[in-house]
Length: 88
Image 1 (cartoon, rainbow, N blue to C red):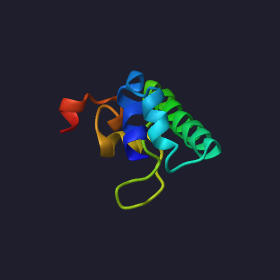
Image 2 (cartoon, one colour):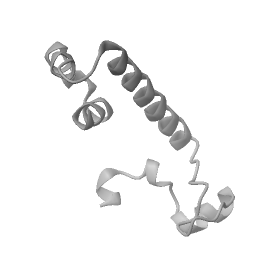
Image 3 (cartoon, rainbow, N blue to C red):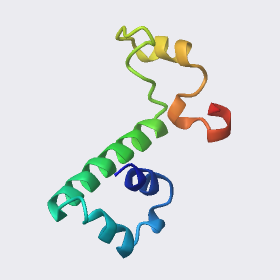
């Protein structure tokens, strides 16, 4: 399942019929569909909020914070908008 979520997030074209056949050895059709819907909902949600420069709602210490404070805490761009190289 981790391979599936990573592939769908980074290279969805790599998920072919053989990939699904392998998943069917451990998951039912309903479970595969449920997992797919959950992943696409979350990937889409994060992509959408990333495009709005939506910052995390919580400070590193767990406090609920507004967008202005979160921007001060997390920098010029939310983690979701930073390039992979800049995040590493």
